[in-house]
Image 1: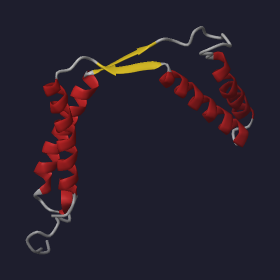
Image 2 (image 1 turned 90 degrees about the vertical axis):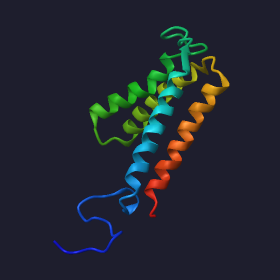
Image 3 (image 1 turned 60 degrees about the horizontal axis):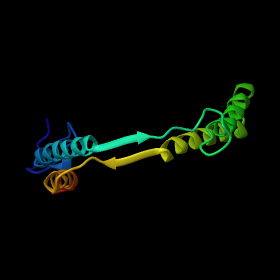
Image 4 (image 1 turned 180 degrees about the vertical axis):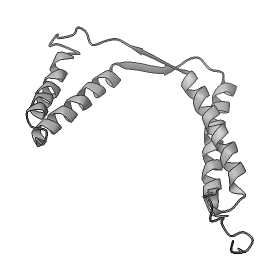
Length: 137
């Protein structure tokens, strides 16, 4: 095994920042980031008010958003290399996804200022520690 100078990165594995000191910072930062992310997601309430009827053509028509995807899938089963089929199928999926997202009502549940600050400090501090552990020291 060849000798290496102190501080030289180990050839056997990738270490955060290229040195041995970044692994602890990375793990603490990752734990903070995951904890803050969990608390943030636990504080969000999501509800929906639906499509307004499966195939109604008025406000919130879900049926109309299925037509391009239906045509695109049919074209892809006929010819798998059809650019129009791929465009219509992917475009239809995007419209359906956008329709679902646009009908969601997303808001925070009631939080104290301390809880909100704790969540933000955990997320921002975790991101900072992870980023600091990845740069060369």
